[in-house]
Image (tube, rainbow, N blue to C red; front, side, top):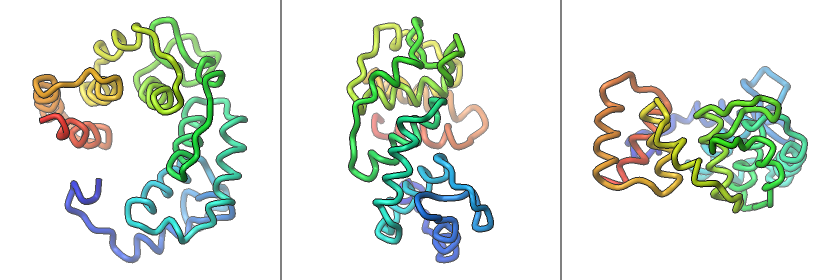
Length: 195
């Protein structure tokens, strides 16, 4: 992503990131003592992107992520734990865990007891399904095509293999008509592979 944006990491940013490292994971900031899955995932991603993953104890992080993988009660926690482990080279069968979040309309819910799915949870769920071998129904393809946000629709359609150059250009134009945030920039990067 950084090379795509033609951006460089300032040295003090790397120092800040490493100052957030705690035994087993990453905190929100250098002062906080509480490590979290989301911060750990993004820190691992950033360190991998810039080639500094060796600066941390992978075994400690793996232990934290594995514990969280099996004890999470939110799809986002399951996602961040699995994706962190995947970045470190580990894969797990989480089909039973994903089934707790999967809905009849092909979406994923953020928590097991929430009856309706949402696009963000579905993006995470589909990503996990593709990596872990969880079988999605045809309803997931229908759900993806109906997502209101063009960025999330693009990301879901790409994950599900529904993207072609015509769709990619149309979705990119739709995204560029609105405000650009994280999801929109990520979607434009993904769409650039198809145009």
